[in-house]
Structure formats: C-alpha cells, structure tokens
Length: 105
Ligand code: FES
Figure 1 (cartoon, rainbow, N blue to C red):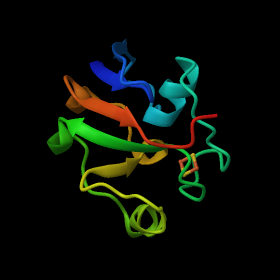
Figure 2 (figure 1 turned 180 degrees about the horizontal axis):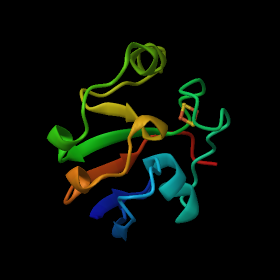
Figure 3 (figure 1 turned 135 degrees about the horizontal axis):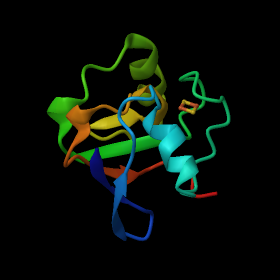
Figure 4 (figure 1 turned 90 degrees about the vertical axis):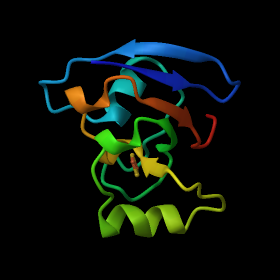
C-alpha cells in the first residue's frame, strides 16, 4: 500500500509499506527513519506517535477510547488526530496522507 507522510518541515514523501504483516503506522514511520519517539512501544500511552490525518480518514476505522483519552490530553489535538501506533497498515490506507505531530526528537 502507498500513502504519504508529511514531516515537521512540511516535506511530503510517499511511503510504500506491506499491508499483510500486521504492522502499525508507528512501526513503519520508525522503520522509515521518521522522528517518532514511540516511548511506550505502541501501547497508546505516550502519544509521541501523534499524527494528523490530512487525507484518507475513512480507511482508518474508529479510534478506541484509550486512544481518544491520550489524544484529548495533548496540548494540541486536531479534528483528525490519531496515534500512529493504533493504526494498522492495510490496503485501506491507499492514498492516505499523514502529518507528523509528535515531538520532533
Ligand atoms: Fe506511544 Fe503510540 S507509541 S502512544
């Protein structure tokens, strides 16, 4: 599946990721060397993997209550904020666009 990622400087790049391995978006971002701390290791506890969904929101499914609790505790939450560790890579993400919103280091 191919989707796009915009970094903190506004640079947008396509990323191709396998959609049959059960990976999370957070894992793919880290593997692609984006600056995602993921301190909690994908447990929806640290919110350092915060992304804003700029396009393709419909393919993502709903956020769980645990995820929403983390997002609502952030200093800035956007209408389409999500935690990248809670997004499964699937073919539904084709053409989606994510902007990194977590801490930049
Ligand atoms: Fe910690 Fe996603 S990696 S909330």
